[in-house]
Image (cartoon, rainbow, N blue to C red; front, side, top):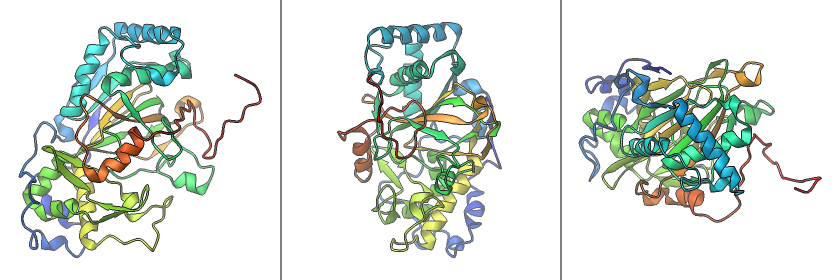
Length: 386
């Protein structure tokens, strides 16, 4: 895996130029109307979390590479868990013992929650496991990073399969199933977003991430007016249902950023209703500023089959480059995504975001654990008993 910085690394001196290229009417006004940061927001954020792609010159800085002994421990844990005859969603450190690797994963959990905010676990060969056992591997390793697992949609899907699907125009344009590149964003809920890469595309499909702390520091230094815009509570989100809230929060001495462009301006798969408020020029400029700084400071991660990614969804933005699938199953991009939260390490969640967090992690209801992609309106009729 390699880390690649695309474009120049943004500097404080260069932020005005980057933001000023947005083309919106307010771009040239800089901080004329509101030159100060919102009350309670700091001048600068923790440098440990404010990184750029050029800070990571070697994959060992963020990849936990499994050795032969680690893989043996995982295989033994899978067999131990299967001997308990429990449902797969009950996997936890207490019943998926990793005596040596577990300590490494505990340290990784702290790094994802309180350090740079991302990590990759590498060394699993998907071809050496059945789909069921590979899912147990994913859930078992993941339980050491964050043990709470959240629903990802109104149907109660716990495992979301990110695969190309052009069966309908709407599916082909949905960011989850499109082969196109997508812009920087966060998931609607979850302290940690994780995914297991079952297979990779023939070309493209890199995971690309950027630090919200870096974006904040650049804006706070030269465009505090944009910070004020992002912190206002009048952003008209349309997904998963209409609501107004800020994009950034400063909660419990930590920055939290949570947004997606599709929920604010619409997309081909989710056209925005004309009845909903449109973004103001100032808000559009703020979105463009986030994207510009994120792209100038981003890091690209060339994922391999078997990789397990863990990204802090509270301050690390992520996006995907476009990709091309091959003909063979092993040449088609297939990620299995989950939303996670740690009881021990979980951050304080702002009031405006709690509805989505509660819906994912606290709401009682059905949970579906589909090991393979299912049609949108799948329902489990059976012709034979279990």
